[in-house]
Image: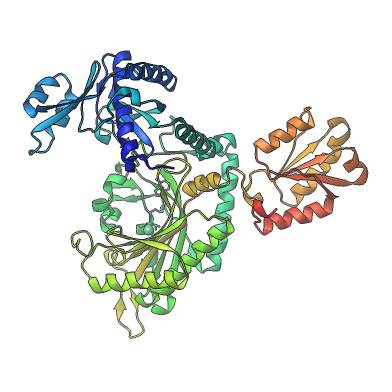
Length: 589
Ligand code: TSB
Ligand code: ZN
């Protein structure tokens, strides 16, 4: 897709279209006041204050119509330069423009305005010459946006749109948006009954429905087994901690704006935890350790709470209550490379099992000049950063480096993925940490008998179960591999009168083998039931008709495939168990 912001002509066109939008809104809502209307990667938006009037999605068509009318007039777009004083006078009734003008650079003594017909807006420009040039546009959505992005400020209404210089490109863009919408995990999650939300529970607090709970449980079992085999020890710790715990860890100073406010209970002051590291530090510190015990790997499927801006929360991808597939690995400095390699190998292994290919590794390093953000130990940083690079090269992993993106406590490796809608997000992460073990006064006895401080690797392979589920739903378009699917086999009798008994027998046989099944015993036509099976993306549909009853066989169809296969029932059981146990991907069926 074209990055509109980086394309000079399209950028001018989109910005002019934002003005056209403002002009139309002003015609239809005379009280409207305008904040800013910038060009973004995929179009433009305008933030508008309408007091208590609300623009709804269905109003956009009317606004678009008015825009077309204004554009057709073909008014010239005229630039005018005025002094700051004149600008303050001209816009004196508009607090938003006054705010913009007053904050302009000291040296900016001349201010430009653009006028088209009856509409004038403060703007640096440039713009197209006449409104006639703004032809191929579409308003896309409307949402709330706090003034200056601050939740303490008034909520404005943000209208998004896009504009091209020809019809084909606009059509192409809209088609792509429609495809992305179909792939959006929020839609799939609703269609497949994976999760819901409710205002009474709160923003960013999804409720996992029975189907979603099956998926999550399977993910938990899967990663637990892998971690067990790699020598992890799993723990359960509370999802609250005292403020003092987070003062000790440093989160209270460095991470407070991402935390829920504290609450007092008797004499103690608690916070909902945003991270699990402090708890795991205490678990490590519960015993004396020798270098022979290390690495010690403490894992937990741990619930965390983070304050995410209300405009940023999104389905399962960005939530305020999440469950991390977390672990903290305590190692000697000499073990960093080897342990990091195991984590990266585990990431590669897991992504391979899920057939994931659309991701990239980002190695976040310190900015050597920034002595304020990063603790001052060049030797330690250099060694750690080189070690991580070495491991990645050894494993032949492609990665890009991001200077200045490291955490203040150490370098890290993140896996970045692109959701159907919206900017990239991090899935897996592995972060080196030299500081936290010191803050908690952790130690081990080295081979020479001296007391040493361990190094910690924070790592989350799925990131959170929430975000990973969102991603996997989008990557598979909801057609999950059989081992993850809430319903694995849908048994469909052609005619209940003759075939239901045998269908139930097959259902019980499969259920007895631990396979998740449903028997569709509704009095509906076969075609209807098959279509529904497809809509629900159930991997296997088993069809039971006369022939199957007579021959003691079953016929099945794999999701997305045309052909129907008839086999002995024992053979089917064997086959589907193999598909599940080997976690076969749909593309390999
Ligand atoms: C890995 N202390 C480390 C941990 O030991 C930590 O918390 N790292 S983190 O802040 O990067 O979070 C881990 C992962 O959680 C991220 O990589 C990301 O995949 C996921 N995550 C972060 N914020 C959210 C959120 N708001 N909603 C869903 N998942 C999130
Ligand atoms: Zn951590």
